[in-house]
Image 1 (spheres, helix red, strand yellow):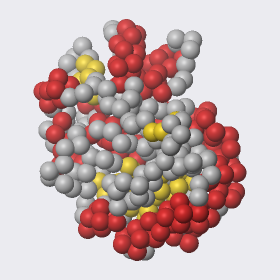
Image 2 (tube, rainbow, N blue to C red; image 1 turned 180 degrees about the vertical axis):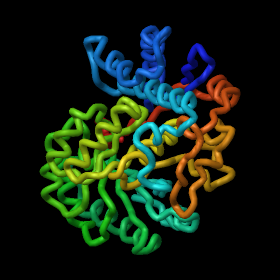
Image 3 (cartoon, rainbow, N blue to C red; image 1 turned 90 degrees about the horizontal axis):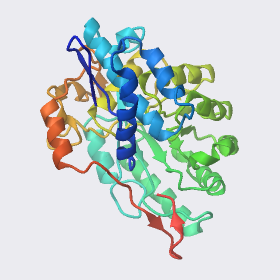
Length: 366
């Protein structure tokens, strides 16, 4: 989405939500009524009005709409002042941001060793994988043995100096997570993400206390008040999504809150280049960043994960597993508006995730 001021300066934001793009777009249209004629520099004020002014608040749809608007306003302000957003947030705390990519792709397996090897060859020092299988409330010994064997093979292939993160995607129950994590502690995963579904976040302390594996969560939490309980429970890493959790404005607050609990930030971002650029601006500005998720994969000249929407995709090119500090004004990227319009006209607006079922046809968590 694009916001343009009366002086002709524009800013871009990525207002989206996997599976729910259309409701977010409609919400943005309704929120636009507040912004017309207003001073775009009053970002915090607009954030307060948009998140609290409609009486009902919270949740992923409203949070994603506000997030896209917030990103665009920060981008616009940066262009108006001729400075990257991280300079407006207090200046850079680092010269580059470590990124990680996904090493999945094998059916009914946890991770893909060949894919991991390819990413390491391209300079990545951290990868993330997820089990590509349905998981019952309590799984069999065979399932656990296979899970451990897959991770062992991945560790052997990637080597001891590569960090491996494991995304359980909310597919495991609390009981299953406690059972499984003890079996993989010797493989020293960097963290285990979403070891339970977000609606059970109040129970995450049980998992934290049951293992030495660092626990991460937050891609389906949308406000700092939702992060406080999991931080108090002892999670090591929080993963707000800058396109769902209120944008740059709110994630800066979440990062500061995490620092109080000796926790680090690893923003969730399986999205496009605008969302990634917004994440990188926060990553550059705050001190407690672990790593940044990315699916852009700019190291691959044949990949089309959104870099074709930019006039300067080279700024997202990783070097030795890190993206160098973005120095251009605003979010640091130049959006090709014609390319965006072509993509919207020819591509599906509503992306969907699969619906899984167990053998008895009951619903299974994807």
